[in-house]
Image 1: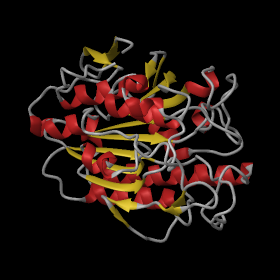
Image 2: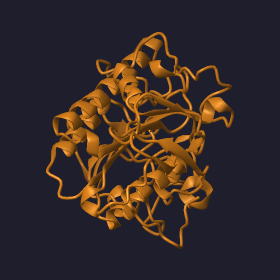
Image 3: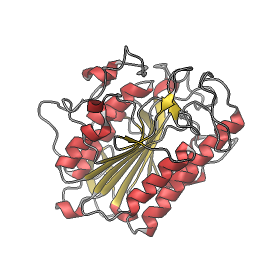
Length: 354
């Protein structure tokens, strides 16, 4: 971790990991926690981080309601290692799956994945009395033992792969694509744009009756290729997902992501959960072709700033002052530590964080 910083709350100054209060009251008073991770978003892709050709009003509002980080970093410049780092709270290379990138549906990669041998943040949160759910992109293995359900999540709705067609919900290499949308471990076939479906499932989960505090991880695949807006057609199975797109399509993808997160925040208000819910927003690595990397050098796949510096902000009404901006340096594993600390969850002594 990068250590602790002092952060002024409304009534006191408390030493906090990554500016978040370590919430150590009795279990019934522990906060709900929502961790939202976007995919392949550039550092400057939100209007509150400098994007000029479109706006992201809901994410801008969320950033303004809490503390905004200007020096947040991903654990790696590509998808899978960063997700490994978040799930384990450890540097990616300490877990076998964190060394595989890109993780594909090929025979070569099929045996790699996260297993219960390595305790995940969901496993630790569930052991501490939280309900756990993952909605969105998994990208940590394809075999039954790699399932989110086998790694601490009570509920899963999403894709297993690195990328899927937003319309047809298929993934895989050209000429060898297959359906990739699951509820728990069962394939499901709803119609709809993936970003919309993930937002809708998150809203439905929040509205459920919860007998325990919940830990909800929402890992959108937006704005990762294939670059498709909500009104576009599916890619033909023979066409490479990395082709196509345009600045206008990218803007439409960002708008649908922003709209969905706005609905999620509105749902927290309607359910009177906002003051009792920590919301963390960040991203897995730098952006690609249509991204704005904020003037930083290079992009996804590079260890230069453009490949690893990401937007990030945290909201907890009544606990974190609105409108703050911090220079505190943060990395993916810090979010894991912060979440576990806020929940009062214990780590596994055999797998120390970082």
